[in-house]
Image 1 (cartoon, rainbow, N blue to C red):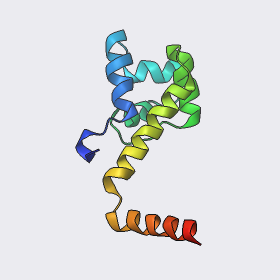
Image 2: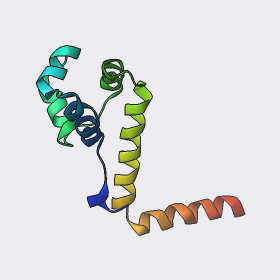
Image 3: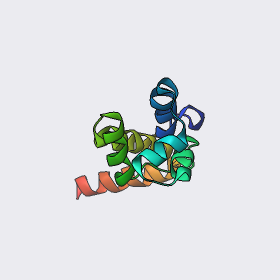
Length: 102
């Protein structure tokens, strides 16, 4: 996936939860007892959704914490795939082939 096509969990938080519910980052943060900048940084794609934040967001929006953790994991994998060098992948493949042959 191209780097410009990545969807950060913060985009989902904003577009699928905050905007439709008419909530601000500040209101959400106060409601779940965390600093506002944590939510705004997540929305802006500048911060990861941690397990703790996933639990709080899960309870706040009646979804599982795994929903948020999986969004973050998917984003991380897509970002890594977009940035990893072909050389690194070839080295890993060569290692795997050598291990299978030996």
